[in-house]
Image (tube, rainbow, N blue to C red):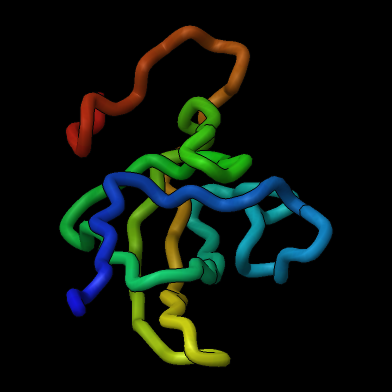
Length: 112
């Protein structure tokens, strides 16, 4: 039996108010630069702490939106809940993007 770990190049959360999801499993209603928010993800996730990463909306199954914002992960920890591993933590918003623009903001983990 192995250890299932996922290395995440971005933070992907559900749409604000998604039914059946907790508040920290979803995007904040409004993203504000400089503000800190919590997140909660099922599974043992690992994030990059030494710079900015993209924040995206997920519909599940790897279906992701364009980059909504550039964020810094400020904390992350793993814990057991009902026999499953979860990752909870916090992030700070560095920059918020207009979804109508056609600009690319990241190339992998490199911010453009």
